[in-house]
Image 1 (cartoon, rainbow, N blue to C red):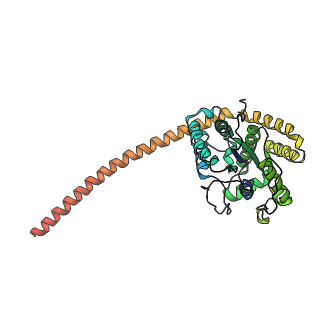
Image 2: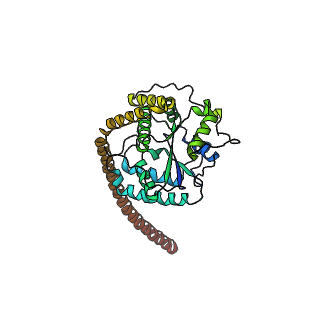
Image 3: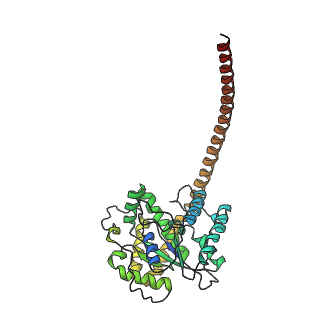
Length: 331
């Protein structure tokens, strides 16, 4: 298996905070907390909606690039990407486009800049390559939430089935841990409601890499957000159960990260067996696209023929109308 590219040759002062995590796991709350602490966020944000009334805190340009790239690489976001995706023309173009965005953001001011998108975990190899090119020191925050609560939230907000949600949780959490080498600050969603000030303080100390005085600043937490107390689903995927159990142990015992990363590597080896099938599915998707494109072109050609016929009929109708008027004149 290809080893992840590691950050290198970093330049102090050009710091980026990357919030990782599955959707519905508290990534937006993490971004709100970072902004409260004085971390800068993008201006071009995706606007709030019913599912996230306080806002997604996602850079619209970054999300658009991620969505387009993911759509070209896999028929389903719940599937792992095929080998070699980094060398595709679309990925290379995405790297260039993201580079323009990041270069603009890190020159705005001295304070760290933060961004998030649940798809970032999937594209971490691309991002780490970008950070290395720009000599940027990234700090990774991993938002965590019990997968049972995530499953319920996905079902309520988007109608997603449990199997695909479990696989999405598994893939994106494994990618986040693997490509950062586990070197990220864990931010459990449930801790915001059990020990909010302590969680807020720990986040501040991590982001600024030193003990911070945050007196006078309140974590942006309300009890209305605490909807994970009564999860009623039962996890089906054994890998999901094992991974989250390891994460829970690591949250209690920080020296457990070695065992956690061993679990990550083992599970990625299991999932690697599915990559040839994913490549086949992606190729099949391209074939289906080509067939649909051929159908569209065929319909377009038929439409042109119909338009020509319509013009002829229109011209003939005008001639008939003129002839009728002439006859009416004579009679």
